[in-house]
Length: 330
Image (cartoon, rainbow, N blue to C red):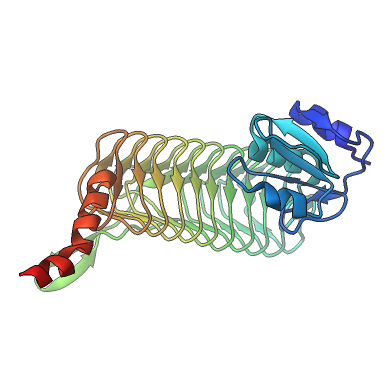
C-alpha cells in the first residue's frame, strides 16, 4: 500500500489533506482518476485542478488554493516531483525479458556474457561480444562482432547493432533502431557512383536514450559519438563521423549530416536538418522544421529555412506578412 504520506516524504513536499490516503497509481490531471496522483503544471489553469478526478495532486508551492476536496502536496517543481513518484512507485519495464538466456538465442562461444543478463528469443550474438551485468536484449535483436554493451543497458526487440560498436552503461535503445550501418559516403568517378568503405565505429556513451527506428551510422575511419546523457527521439538519423556532446535533446525526424559536431546541451526541435561539416556550439537551440546551413556559435537560438537568429526571423515574418498591404499601396 502506498500512501499520500509516503509520497510526500519521497518528494520532500508539504502535504495538505489526508496523509493515510491510499494511492493506486499515477494519471494525467485531466480527466484524472480516483485514488491516483497527478500534477498541476506551474502555468496550468486552476480550473483543471478542481475538475480532476484524481485524489492527490502535486502543485507548486507558489499556487494559492483556498478550499478543495482533494489532498495537495506543495513542492518547488511539480513535474519533476511527479515523475520521481512514477519512477519510484509505479514504473514498469516495457518489453521485459525473462532473466537468463532464451534457448532459441544464438550466441558465439567467444563472447563474454555476465551472469545476470536477459536475452530474448531469436537473439543473435556474434564473436567477441562483451555483455555486462544487468543488460537486457529483446527478441530478434542482432549484436555484431566485437561489440560491447555496458552495465544496465536495455536493447529493445528488433534492434540491429553492427560490428565494433561500443555502448556505455544504462543506455536504452528502442525497437527498430540500427547502430553502426555504413555511412552515406559517395565518390563520383567516370560517370559512376562508388560507395566509400566505412571502417570506423560507433560509441554511445553512458545514459543515452535512442528512440524507436533511429539510425546511427559508423564513421568512415574514426568514430561516430553520442555523448553522455543525450536523449534522442524516434526516427532520428545521425550520419557518419558525427560527434554529439553531453545532455543534448534531439526531437523526432531530425537529421544530422556527416562530420558535423554538436556541443553539449544542444536542443534540436522536430524535423530539424543540419547539413554536413558544421559546428553547433554549446547550448544552442534550433526550432522545429529548421534547416541549419551554417555553423552556430554557442548559446544561439535559430529558426527557419535557412536557420537564422530567431529574433531576426520573427521580425522578418512580420515584414513579410505586411507585403500584400504594401503592394496594394503602390
